[in-house]
Figure 1 (tube, rainbow, N blue to C red):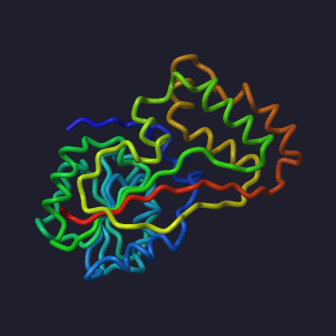
Figure 2: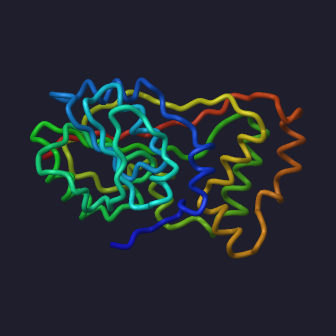
Amino acid sequence: MSFQDHFSAHAGAYAVYRPTYPPQLFSFLAGLVSEPALAWDCATGNGQAAQALGPYFKRVVATDASNRQIANAFRAPRVSFVVSAAEHSGLASGCCNLITVAQALHWLNLDLFYAECQRVLEKTGVLAAWCYNLLHIEPVLDQIINKFYFDILGDFWPAEREYIESGYRSIEFPFVELATPDCHMTASWSLEQLIGYLTTWSATQRYHTCHGENPLKQITADLQAAWGASQTQRIVTWPLTVRVGRIS
């Protein structure tokens, strides 16, 4: 089955520059399941969510439709990586205690994926999906990044990006929904790390393909002036939206 692949071309950078999810999120999710036997991390990308689930579950299966993403994913104990589509996991019926989808639910064929979730989850199993949108550093830097996101890259974002911008609140979620804690990601980054992260945006790549030049050139000088010394570390924050549900 074909899939929307916006990230394989820069899977190496994706693995290096994407921020990591907070440990308390995985502790919370593990506490919801009846038995921590098997977790399925769907559309695993660089594997960071699967890696974080490893200490809580006897076994984690991490799948992605992209060979390159799987090749570049972080390896971890008790985590196995498989190239497979979200709609056809290859897992046995009723075998999963937890399914996670990190920053990827909006790319999936939801009807087919939800049917697969209904098939592979055990009767008290949990589906968790989360996303994050724009980062926050300091007002002057946020203004430059917002200009990049909206004004320069605006037309190059896929339509599915709307789901991220709404915090997944506009996305279909046919499960019995559970309350979730407030979560956010933080990182201490240099300017080089910030620019590396902006390079991983799918719209940055699409702009480059269309125009033959890196759109980051349009804001690099402004970022440098606002950042100061390039190796200065600044705190970067991303609010997380988490949706969790059981089979209805």
